[in-house]
Amino acid sequence: MRKTLFLAVALTVTGLTAVDGYASDALREAIAEYQARTSTSFAYTLSVTSDRIVLAHGILSRPLSGDPVSAARRFLADNRDLFGLREGDVEHAVASTTLGPRTLRVGLQQTSGRIPVLGPQTYVHLDAAARVVILQNNFLQDLRPPGKPAISTAVAAAKARQACGGLGGTIFTGEPALVIRPDGCARRLMYYIP
Image: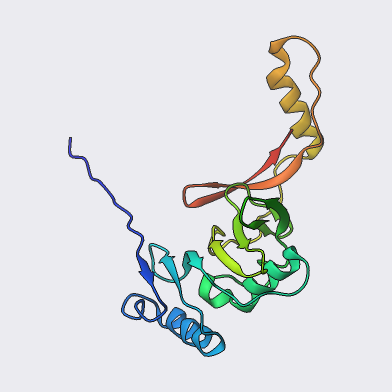
């Protein structure tokens, strides 16, 4: 039996000009536009397809105004071409914040058609001066709103209680929430039942 090994490699470059030979034309244009707006440089990692930045660290912005969530959304929306984001990706994402020892981390959970996508979030780290210093871009690409679920929330809750019923005792479930779960290249519409 013959085994095949596939290896995905991410490319990290420092400064915004070193990527020109690897980036797509659209990304190269977005980087040039970014350079025209700001004089900051930072290290970054491109996606395996070299069409977007998936990780960046250093001083990525000047101090941002407004509350941290709005500032993070605005930064991503203003630079969506660098990160491979589409119109609405950032605006409809579910936000959370976490205070760390050196940064305030704004987490944005991707949605599609207002349905949350399970999995890693996109994180924007702001320093004490409200500058973006780390960005982890985990949004899925080409995510389209899913169709309608095959079962209702009531049926989903009943199936969950039935599946757990053999454990004995009383089963309490929260309200089922429709979510999208990445499964390799496929996206599955399912109910999350807390």
